[in-house]
Length: 500
Image (cartoon, rainbow, N blue to C red):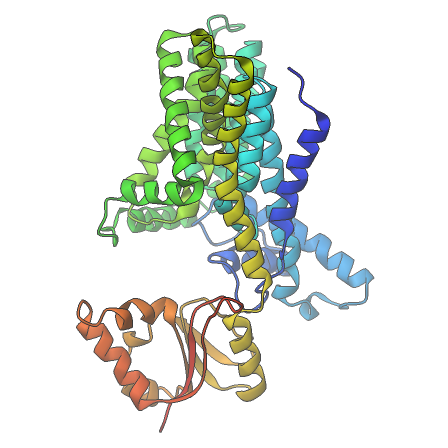
């Protein structure tokens, strides 16, 4: 049952290579969505000495962690002569180290998946960890300073400690599982759902010392204590937290923009990440786990890998804001379920007296079907971000051709300009009329196909938006256009001069 250490090392090396490949891409001009929300506040904490984030879209734990990493980065830069004071250290100098922390969380999650799946066996563990190592969505988000990857780490840690607590049956073991759930909630609010796993494990464990009630209270108390210790300004700035949380909750209750049901949108995301073969295997593993949950034996471990992803999927499907990365916390149990479908599903063929060699070949074939499509997608993503894209070319052109202090409006947050420009970002240039840009003294406009592409591509469906964009394009003077190609990834960008 013991796996080869070499095989595990290869899986972890693959996971690290995929997550650290081109880690510095896009700094400082094309940062990931929500990266500045965390890094700018972390660096501000370091420079001001005030640890109140004054921002409660996230609980605060990862911002504080990044502030600690930024402090170490500053000391390293000072020793190397990069700067002599805090004022000389720009925010962009801290992104690479911050991203490295996220990438480490990503690799560590692969190791946790391995230990979770070892409860079923060595082949399960290597297959589950190998699949987690190459999942393209997890690989992509591990390149950015976002909360979803560390959240996934703490959710997986909660799963592992819940299994361990079920095996040991002590209140102390359940305490540590609850503490991991509290850290998940302190990283992102929806991580609080991770507390379901140690509670399930407690209720499904027949003999708990000293009692099931004591273990349940240990889980709840540890989760609350870990959350408050990791995100203390939830209490220290109670009005700010309550106001911020209420505002955030209102945004998630708004009417959804997508015409499709949200659960269907997320299923499409899963299909794109796992591929059709992987989706079929995951569904088979989920079905098998539900059967085992009802019939036994080992109901607790089956419940932990099957119930949480279902509850979490339903939870995010009831929210109006949809991002593919919101699915990350359910990937570890889904990888375990996929490995169960492959290994246990093929093992069921023994009752039909099928020889071992064909069964082994079938396991190998299904393993390739499960791992190869996401692995190819992950490698293609890393290769793409390693190339110089349209955003980098446009950023360099602006630096060379547009004078400092010029007033520039950039469509979307796909490109961020340095502070020597009077720059503002807008979701769509058409939110203001061309006459408004003139009147406000705007000198340059940067249009992105990420915003205007759908409207220009289907003018019959969006006649008003198409006409508004064409008015801006016709009345301004286009200076340069950067068009994507196979060797130049990114959106199409048009840089235009506002004519007086």
